[in-house]
Length: 265
Image 1 (tube, one colour):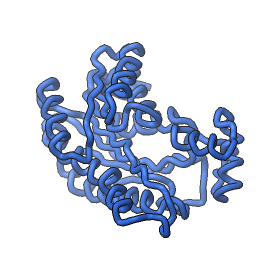
Image 2 (cartoon, rainbow, N blue to C red; image 1 turned 30 degrees about the horizontal axis):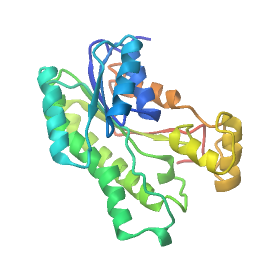
Image 3 (cartoon, one colour; image 1 turned 135 degrees about the horizontal axis):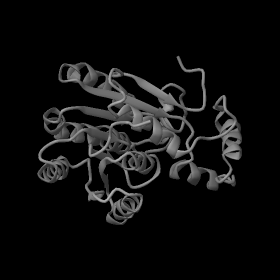
Image 4 (cartoon, rainbow, N blue to C red; image 1 turned 180 degrees about the horizontal axis):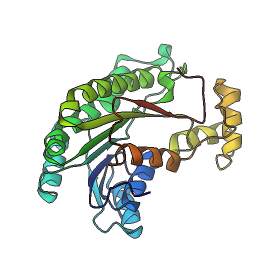
């Protein structure tokens, strides 16, 4: 199915690895011009090379700390110069790295969760909006998490930040409807990305086996999916690719669970 992404301009924040990279690959495969944004030059250069090898010759790797608004403004100014001031797609796939129970978390931990998980997204949307509004069509997808609906005691700060992302995104969908810019949220479940694989290794689970991963999640957290396996990053990427495409012309303000099945309401 043609998603209508040929020559569309796209920024994937957190596109250097995991679900962000999988999303960038899906967009590039459909002909979009993709800039992946991350904190380390090595990761974004590796991702851009991967995208070029897949047939996206204009793929870019951009380094920025999105918690620093000045860096974000400069990033989008540079992209605007390259893309005639227009942007079709913004994907924010970054989440906070803060882990620990409520008793363990300091004030600095809570502030870091908001800076990494919320303010970075705010900075990127704010800087991108003039470019999105100038383009003929625009889409935003922000990553939330299934922990906003199915709590984990080791993720209170992470989940609070993701809940803010969901709320802000729904407000943006209302604000930007007048511009016909669609804003949606994707909430991944247990996906075999770097963070989950790192946890699996720490508890002695074979991360290459998605069925073993889901069994371990059930054992340790009591949060199994209906499907008996963990998901894969490209299963997130394909959903995001539809949401940011021209094929999606009427879905906005939605929070899409991609979680292998759950009892979410």
